[in-house]
Length: 356
Image 1 (cartoon, rainbow, N blue to C red):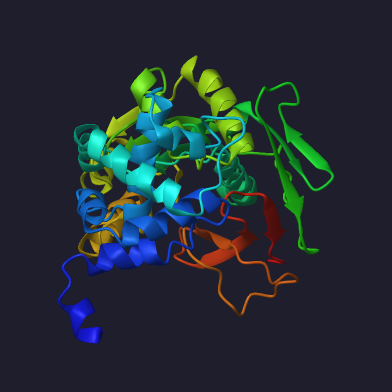
Image 2 (cartoon, rainbow, N blue to C red):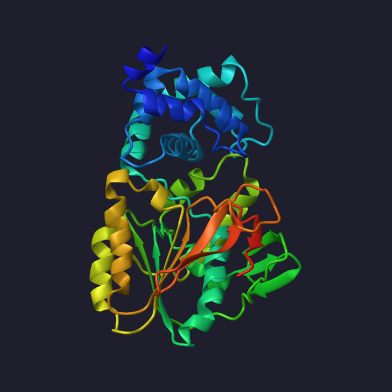
């Protein structure tokens, strides 16, 4: 068995689908992933994505995108995003429908998988950005900051100042916004005042393949990356898309390793800058990680840089009151010291402030 796996050119892709534990709230995708893992033709289709892209996210995003276009195929009967009473995905029928669908729409799926990127704009992650900005306010002495998001996709997170927030029993932001985000508050660490934020001198997103939220196909791609069962997430995405489309932030296309040094040279010397990325670095190919990090560090060459990220698992040594699995909201200041501001659910359903 070991020799068979070692000689299998599809092994890494197969393993990703065989153990698709990332689909925590999608029984449909977990079931269909096992079908893909056992089918060489489906694995070859899934392998047509760019280096660094998660094959499970990309493959099912492409399948979902085609289904959301309204095509008439038996596979739609298993998707809660297409039908009100979906058929159970366990059993041979769902697998047969997936194989038939991929054969029928191979050209469309190949086009999406080979050209698109996993660019999930979790609107809730704007809470992480707002949290970080509120935390660093005392360190900037009230000087307006230049805000850059790497992996901005359609820029929905950059609309952090247009949304309303409820964290525990406390409310922040715009109470009249059509986008209202809620997070459970864990532990007894201090929650910063999320209504006391630094002024912003400029805002810019950077993305390998920017999404135009006003474009029907681009918006459908982002919707397709939302798992079929996640109706609440889809409603949030729809509301945020309408809000941001009316006044979208500027987003520059390009590789952060190239774009950020150029941007750094254009910023006024000495003025503070904040860079934010969430679920972005995880998609950078391993051989390019050093260049990605160097691009971000270049922003601090001629002015103080605060580096805010939501990417890594938390340090087990953190003084936590909860054992929930989450991600670390990390902030590295101009002095190079990195600290964890909070441990959060990956989709910001809960927040546990750290007592720093």
